[in-house]
Image 1 (cartoon, chains in turn green, orange):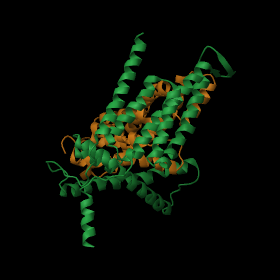
Image 2: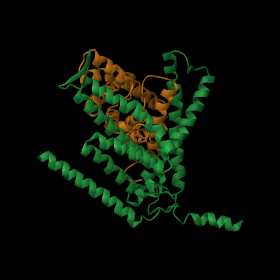
Image 3: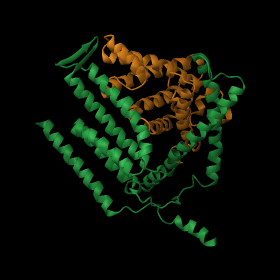
Image 4: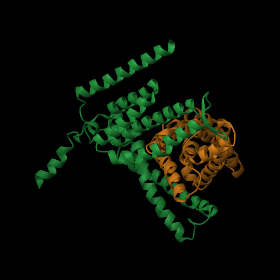
Length: 267
Length: 190
């Protein structure tokens, strides 16, 4: 029994490995690689490339065993946003060769091309962003940024914001139920529902603000605003050389693409 | 605590959460507006410009997890934080008519920023309720920028006026002993 307790303490001395290349990757390396790949689609500006990238992001999410969480958000973007964006672009872009006309709607070749590239760019950019958010632990990310000189106050703000959203979400439901007991209508016609907004949000905000005051005292009692370096329970994984090289490779590739694009523009 | 006040550090997460949870309550009540910038306006007003900007920035990043295309609209949040702090110093949260006027100012400015972005980035399509209105106006023969501007402003006016009024009521119901401790407290305490 005693041995087990010590083991628990020793576990904190080692970085947490998730045994998955994508999940274990340093948050900043990941952000760097995803940023240059997402930006490269805007530089190349070809919808085949952008669609292919979107597919790669989906596969990466699957490789990180986060496919379910990723796709649950991604399909909405593809269905509601990208496809509608394509339709609007295709229907209202003026061009030379009109394929189809109906009232104010005119479908042209240019419109279809513009629609495809807009939809593809939205899809690949969204894919990169969601992939990063789904495969990165927020606490790892802010700790990494802290190591790079970000203030621990910002770490607190970011992590606390996520916590707050959960807490306030729960109290919103509680307040809503309490107000229903007092006879405030949350159903019925539009005006009745609109009237319920203030009685729910008001107490929520005021209690959260009062809580902030207490929190500041409690955190100060734990040396939150003390000068000097803060220690951390978590240890981060050392970045292997291969990962450094990978980041450099991607950055170089991006610079080359950018240079190629600029030269074609100049011509 | 450096540049930010001690209390402000703990109020910024509250502002972010109020933005997001406010938006969730609206969805729960099935209202056809957003009301997802109450925290930004509130923190901009009671804590100042920089905290307001931080609230706007982090809110947008968290919201973008479910819809990355809204990231460019962070600028709109910045504008709201700026307006809130600028006019709070001029006692615009003191009376109801002034708060009403401030709501209209916010609506005009945010529409003026958001519409060019809608048109340039997404061809006037933003994937929200007012896009349907905009598309309808476009089909009636209005040009894209005008159609988007009309629909955005109508939605924005109701939304922003209500947001500012909610902030006005919240600030009004804050006790003086709390307001005094805030960076912008001098402008609210009678």
